[in-house]
Length: 108
Image (cartoon, rainbow, N blue to C red; front, top):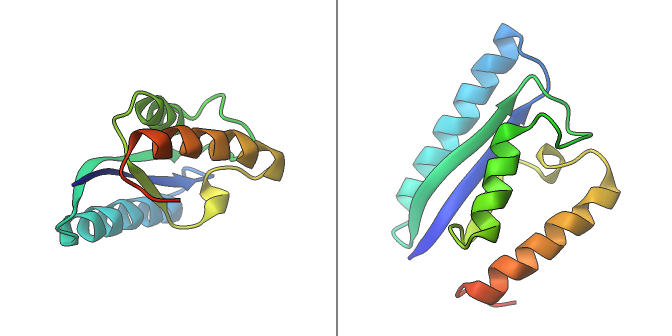
């Protein structure tokens, strides 16, 4: 069984975006719970923050910490831009995923 986390982010805290965030969180809960080989660790999220920095993204930073501590085997998200807007930051995420992969059952 894989411990799975999901990540959602909306860049504004408008009512419309709040509804979108709740919809995303519900979608991921259902998706993870439908898979008999997955166990939901947490749906991590940030609301009203930009993807250009990780400075004020408590949900994202907690997710990365959990991954580095071996508490997550897999992270899913709606689209990769939810993680970062700057492509250079994907390298950090790639390194994190490699550390996760080396401790889990996920093949390359």
